[in-house]
Image 1 (cartoon, rainbow over the protein chains, first blue to last red):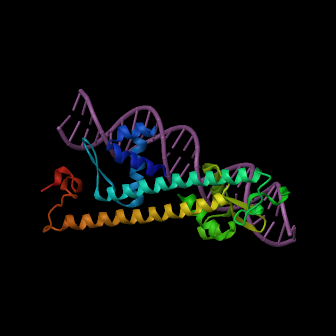
Image 2 (image 1 turned 120 degrees about the horizontal axis):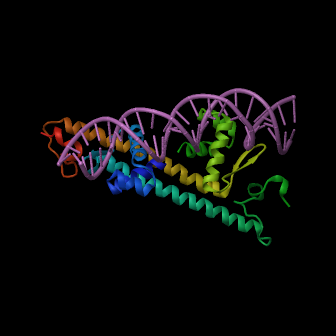
Image 3 (image 1 turned 135 degrees about the horizontal axis):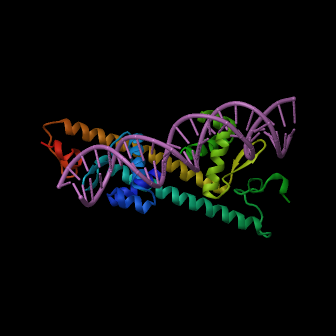
Length: 114
Length: 114
DNA sequence: CTAGTTTACGACTGGCGTAATGATT
DNA sequence: AATCATTACGCCAGTCGTAAACTAG
């Protein structure tokens, strides 16, 4: 996951030094992350030039997917949290009873049910 | 990432033992993964009953997102690999020249260009 | 020599497996 | 007692940071 975020940042900056700084890690650490990512995907995602970095076609493809996946996970995490808070506030509300999709046995341990 | 796959599998099986077996890890390892995942998301995703496990509303929301994200990453990895292979075979083909979206300087090191 | 990336290496953290503990029927 | 999940703990792989090495201009 961290590797994906690092890759996206690097693909935006096209410069290991700047990207590493923005990610609050050192340049070698970023280099290792990318190396490992490329090894996992088994594909060269970017080309190291002496005056910076450029994306390969595979890298561009991967960038789109990585961005989408990261955004999806962020949204999902947020949605789950919000869903939990909503259930929580409803559980504390004494006037509203349980609903079909939210039975008490999914919200409370059996021991602490009223 | 592994945690997401573990969670999805567990959500399908609703049983730590079976899910762990299918994931080829031990039950405690799976328990720890889920615990860390819930800590990261800061939300209870599933409720441990004595006769199995059940998803919370937040867990169901998270499950959908996790499934989508995992599938997206799988597809992306595959797509990147295929893109790389395609570029590779085209690079080896002497009759087809470079295209606008595939300039030589992204496919070859500067030193080994014709 | 400078700018930029990678390699080497010691140290730390995370995650797994085994074994023990807890809780419920 | 039996079943299912969690906690405790030792161990190994992964990852970080510092420092050294490599490459191209």
